[in-house]
Image (tube, rainbow, N blue to C red; front, side):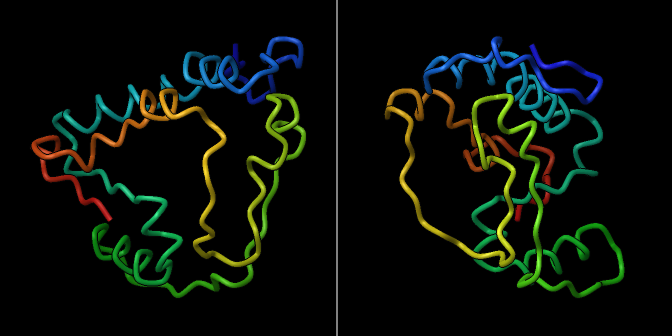
Length: 142
């Protein structure tokens, strides 16, 4: 289980194959986050949410960020999307996913194929924000 104090799980707790690792991460980390998002999405304060699709952000980062400022009613601030960098190697290694949080210097779309079996990918493709009828409170989706 992922600790709540910001530390990483013990390496021996993380399954070694991709199928078990996805199930582990969904159960102990990602699933709870998605459930919290769904609760907020359909809750009374949904009008305070702004959802940004990863695909939108990497295809046109400047336009999406400007739209975020607009949705928030904030003054715009231009960023440099060609000079970013971030990594979290210790955490990534601890969950058996080296490079998971490695951010390349340039924000851009780089197509890649999933390593997940199709059934597992389909099972966890929870993009409810793009499904008809699933945005009754009008969340700003970019």
